[in-house]
Each structure stands twice: as structure tokens, then as C-alpha cells.
Image (cartoon, rainbow, N blue to C red; front, side):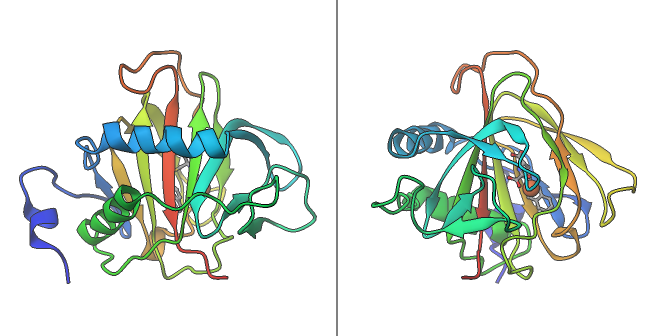
Length: 219
Ligand code: MD3
Ligand code: FE
């Protein structure tokens, strides 16, 4: 069931970018300070690490994560991608998803028209000035029925949103602190990326942008 207050509450009006892609401007603004604190607690346990592309190239963003399972691509791998329940150092598991993460992801998915979303992983990307993310598809969750919910914190960035083929036209969408986007249905496998982060300083987050992506990974 769609939640009436999430959909029609005074706080946000959902903007449909394209079928399946719903922008909830400032949806996470109120929760941003606690979300940022939770990110800092997680990255004290699992520090941000440099990641690599499928081709083994070093990426400019750094990543951490939490949940049952999360993304690991910080080593060259013959596999397209690796999800592991163990942190790279071994021994311990990834930190649990903080209750606020889960709650926010569920509320956002609901407001975006994807009720019943139960993410089991959250990838945390960190961009410092100059960091970018090339056009790609997210295919590694092995569950295309579930949407991805993304939350932007800190410095603003220009998000690139293409179609199902790399060669198609690409929309530029500015994303700012507290903006949430739900990507599901026909938008789930669209090509996307971000332009290099511009220099700046955000009062709550500092000289960086943090992006949370909530995912349901089929194990
Ligand atoms: C559209 N992250 O981690 S979030 C990623 O800003 C990733 O860090 C970007 O792309 C970032 O894979 C973009 C927005 C996003 C996430 C997943 C999508 C947009 C998407 C999946 C399908 C279509
Ligand atoms: Fe992606």
C-alpha cells in the first residue's frame, strides 16, 4: 500500500524523472545529521577503500557499506562483481544496517511507488573533489524486481541518467544534500553515472559527497 503521508505530505512532491525513476527532493533532509553520524560509525569499523572497475581500473570514489551483504570490488576479479558477507579483512561481518537506514529506505521506496522494499545491503560511496563515476549499469544484485534507493549527502553533484543502451541520450540531474531517488521497474537497468565533484565545503558533511544506495541482493 502506498503511504498517504509519504506521497501527499507537505514535505515532498515526488517528481517522476522517467517511468520507474522518482526523485524525492529533500526527502532525507531532516534525517541527514543522523544518517551522516551513522556513516561515520560504520566507516570507523570499515574504512572507505579505493574501488576498482570490472576492468581493474582504479576508481576515484571510495566505498564502504553495511548490511547482510555488500559490494566488494576493491581487488581485481575475474568475476563481474563480488558480493560477500565478510569484510575484506576477514573475520567480522559487515556492520548491521542502522535502523534509521532501513526505515528511510522503506519510506522512500514506498513514496516512490515501490512498497514492500526490504533492502539487505547499503553501499556507501564517498566522493572528494574531482571524483566521478563513469556510465554503467547496476546488474550485480541479481534481483531486478527490487528498486534501488539512493540518498545524497553533502556537496551537490550532477547525476547522469541515460537509457538502456550506452549510446542513448543522457539527462543531467543535479542532486543535493538530502535528495533521494528511487530507481525501479523500467529505470532499474538504465545507464547512469556522475560528473566530477566540484570543490566545495558542506557545513554538515565537509569537503565531500556521500551517496547511500540501498539494494536487495539475491544470494
Ligand atoms: C539508476 N552510485 O553505486 S546513485 C552506484 O552517486 C552508483 O554514487 C551513484 O551508481 C552515486 O552504483 C549513483 C543513483 C543510482 C544508483 C543506482 C541506479 C541511480 C541508478 C540503478 C539504476 C538506475
Ligand atoms: Fe550504479
